[in-house]
Image (spheres, rainbow, N blue to C red):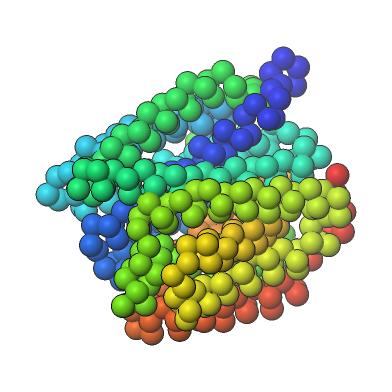
Length: 422
């Protein structure tokens, strides 16, 4: 790739941090924000789960990202628009109709973020060789999750501090989103210089609409004609079935009063737990997953990673029954869950890459993320209703029960023994 080659360490961490941050803002930070505004769990879970839709249907436009312009240009454009979207949310939160306006701009963020995902994943696949992809899968998933913890942790801590200082949740969150807007404009400027320019991306030619739609149909055809594709799709939709429901109610559980089954933590405390100890545990788990997978391959580690991402959810069963007052007991439980998630999510990402090989690997990877999002969207929409119906204690037991299908489906997967081995 000559002079267009860039050191992966110079762009993969920031690229996947910038990919993960809007996702966590839309899916998780918005949950905490609306909870602070006094909106019910049912309404929060239902409406924020609908925001998964852009990731569900993004395969419908992913071939066009593959065909028109370069991945690098798509990444830069979407990061700039994300900055504008965040600034718009900051301006609308103090208004009387903040919920309608903020949801509208969160939808805009979601669609734009989904397009950013397509482009950045494509740049990863064509900018690295297979050995580099295997090695950096742990790094990319770690920094993606670091972004999620930064949003759910450090940004929430800031919002909590500002809430107490300004005595106004709406003003506090408006300032936070204003800061985020500046962060994304900075990403846009930095990546303009840091992102690679793979030769394959510079050799694209202008194509007719007939050719575009022909390739569009071929991408889907080739994906769904893969061997054992049914088991692969079911795996994508069930691997995170427990987490899809847990993620919508974990923060409300920590924030809700003890009298109604929660732990009664402040917004700043929730941010501190996730933004410090959680991020350390996640980093260790993610890097460990990538290193071990590159040595022994995905087939060897998939069961261990499946256990790691699901069984630690049981800490919430303990927390809901014991309702400990100790900050350190709660923090230790979150550390266990985050460590397992970091290790287990690496296996999920590797499997997505595994079934996305071939001529249209960027579009195929987008299809896999679409199924992942669908598996998060539908259960998440119902999670608030289930929790209010049976309470936090029984809800977290249900989350563990919901992990069973993933173990059954994994038994039917066919994975090449040497895939992912360095």
